[in-house]
Length: 470
Image (cartoon, rainbow, N blue to C red; front, side, top):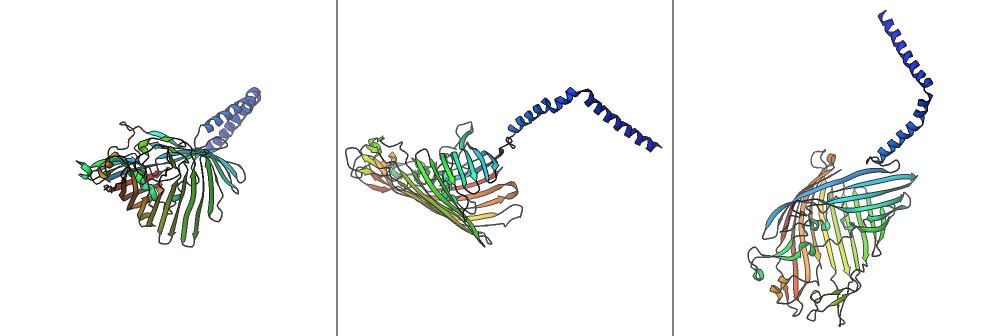
């Protein structure tokens, strides 16, 4: 009986609610019209505003995503006389964040953009024996724009980029199948250190003399840098991707990259050519103390033909069952900036320079499966030609006598190794790296042509770091 009453009461409640709802609709037609008109229009407009301010969603046409990385390291260094340790942002692949957007507007066609910013704090390439790399005492971080560009892409025709972006040959010498930084990557964090001569050399007292010349000047990366440009990439054709870029009426480059796997062999590589005809220095008068003349003395010069040609590439091969891999990268740069000496027929040309790098290692899962692969590697490389025919520091007088002097026969060998541990589930890498540099150079007196080999101190660097992506 009680159950029957409950059922009857429920039915009456439902019927009453339905009647009130229907009556409301019947009695307030104006309100019903509002619900179907202005009210919904306002609601739709508000939703559009919220979507436009929601980063992960973008607007209704372009989907926007946020990504980036934090990459810091502890750098321990020794220059033969002094030792210290700094915590710095890894300049080889800096801490950064980016916004990317994409939209498909017809089958096989899409458009999008990238806006990427990096942090410039205690940058690894700014540290030295006298600086920990922070921009000021408060260690305020500044932001630098890396990329701001849009693209238009066709699955069949390729993609075109316009804006501040990477040229075709950018990082072409860094194509390492193991994902380990190579070639001149070490220079990005050690280049700011000043060269030092040993205690007692040329009258130096105390802990030796620091020269104005840096290790980075003897080990330049010679990588093409980002700029305002147009770049085109083809679709992958049998594993090959061809790229070409032009920018600011000053440079042009072309590159080809290759990626393929046959059975148990995986190959990644690329090669490129870059030319820069920046006319900024054309016609510039160089001061007399800047141009050494091989026949003796110094003369002023008018800089002409400031053209640079650069060739670069890399090749990396891995045997996938064992994880054993090899990697080779190189750069070769020619300078055509002939400086026509005033009132003479002589020319002075900046010396060409080159860089070669080898890496051999193994990448396998040795630890727990939830960690990721471990990479162990060794490396060797050298730089030649950097700073040749350029002014040497005033301290050079202690080696070749009074007067102006210039560098000749510059070479820097380096060797080292490291371990990289991937943590896949955290999108993270932890690593340790050691490298030893042996800089060498001759100094020539411009007037007497007296030549001496400078006994630079050797460097070693030990770094511990981590990179996490988001």
